[in-house]
Length: 261
Ligand SMILES: CCCCCCCC/C=C\C/C=C/C(=O)SCCNC(=O)CCNC(=O)[C@H](O)C(C)(C)COP(=O)(O)OP(=O)(O)OC[C@H]1O[C@@H](n2cnc3c(N)ncnc32)[C@H](O)[C@@H]1OP(=O)(O)O
Image (cartoon, rainbow, N blue to C red; front, side, top):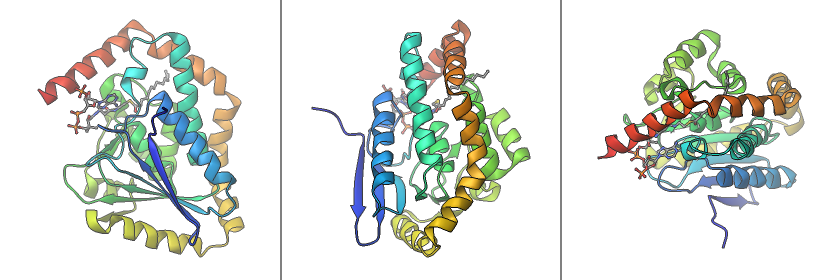
């Protein structure tokens, strides 16, 4: 039986779906997870009754740990290529969605987890000091590709992105609010109610006007990836299969395990 990585609950009375990521222990984004996520987004996009999506997590304390490192370590170039296509597809479906997308960030959200959040239209994060969010790729010895970087620039601006990406910064909730990485903080118990109430404000705007505006803002980056999608895959495969990068990933995974022990 196929494993489910996300639960989708559609409320037909409001036209809002809640996608809950549910892949313990840390909602890492594996090839299967990403494929299922993109299919779910596609289905909701095709559903004329669905106007908005709230993205959140069922896993305690974690929104998403980002890309599943085990999908990039010790794998064949073919596997790495398939994995990267799935990462691209997830981003294209989320960043390019015509629906209103709100991230209810109820836990830590490094790297690919942060990418998911900043690909949404609005972010509300639980105000808990131990949670963090950011594109920390350089800390793993890897480089956030241009479309991660440009998504971040569109969210927090050029200078803050440069600072943030070079240092691989992870922000706690008040810091994330200050830099503009999230739009609002909320207590754990009120997070989903607040997300629904923000959604209502966005739903009050006529869809066609909001959708064209959103597309105007995001299309240049999306088109840039679409124009060079296969080259981006080959770039990734060449980069990630390098001995030095594989070594960095191995050391990072060992560090994660040691931290635990
Ligand atoms: C020249 C240009 C070329 C361009 C080429 C582009 C290249 C770009 C490539 C990729 C971009 C990468 C994006 C990413 O998203 S990489 C992933 C980054 N993620 C992280 O750094 C997060 C790491 N994890 C953590 O910090 C923590 O786990 C936590 C804060 C999320 C949760 O902490 P805690 O609750 O304490 O849990 P544990 O640390 O104990 O973890 C439990 C368990 O899960 C494993 N794990 C954690 N994160 C991941 C992960 N991302 N992938 C796979 N597995 C993960 C962890 O190892 C533990 O495993 P266990 O010991 O076996 O139980």
